[in-house]
Length: 312
Length: 185
Image (cartoon, rainbow over all chains, first blue to last red):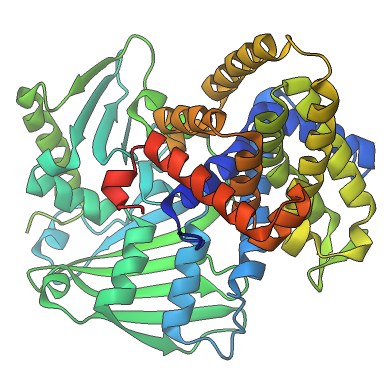
């Protein structure tokens, strides 16, 4: 008889119950309960805001509870770099959205940096939730957005005119597109996983309340793309506040990409989907069905890649 | 700000609020699986959480809260269904309504996207295949109750509780087609 706690059915059922936390009816009931126990006056929000607030609370509560149960509270003095990265992975696994400012500065040794205006740092905003992300320009005119959804698809939304959306499974994305997308974005869960497994971690001197970890690749396949990664982790929340990636391409310097955390909140689920960035009249094409559109995707990313010095 | 002691760590009332928000959904789903009536389930959950919060000085809400909540929901649901058995003939109709309501809830819930609607539906169908005792056994187990605690709650022997749990897992696994994939014995 199997009675252990690791039974796959138990895990599925546990996840099913946990996901019921986000149920709107449950949150309405929670509001009534909170009113009854007089714990906190329930502020009248619109339905959407109640739900978003609830999800934020759930994320925070999950962080607190999991920290208790997991015994992951590490004091800043005792934590090894590996433990800090593990704790950060744990913190970033929660369904909370984080906004990072992405600044790309070309390496002076990169020949592209000699082109006019090439040395102006490029800025984009990157929203992340787990391994999903979406990116838009930091400039006032946000005429494009790109992202990666939970179904392992890369999408691009071109907002001018009625709008055009292109969605391609990641395994069908041309290498040049993938490289540029990698340069401009960050999949925080994957990054932390890889840092832990394939990088040598060195704790650097840091101000109180911060862990500064320098990661250098152990393996050649990483060394071809990344020289080093500097992680700035908040000591108490374990959230990665800043990531500086020294990008190389076949050992030739490319650019320094800095991701700085500027906001933590809850975004509507749709923002990680292509449809969330287009209107009803926009045309959406699937790359699988329309291979002719792949060149458009390629041109867009090549253009972005050139301005960021990727096309060495 | 008012504060109270949870799990030995001073936390704000916002954490207690978060605990309520975090646990109301699972508790409601659990209660619905036992009483098969949305409104009754809501009443039971509201009552149990309020009583639990009222006595939160005497235990660690963060550590034991969900287990205690599920236990008190179990007792309340058993009381309710025992009384309900006197009124036969309404059960089937009520069950159908419950299924409809569950489907509506699922369609409105963005979180269900994360689990996958099909899987969620399968799990809900699977739970309906279980007897009430099996539902209690497996759901109490996943919130951290031991077989002994389940046995005490259901007033059965520990072996019997183990059998209930095992069968509940088998039925669910078979329904979810996990038997072949995961080689569950």
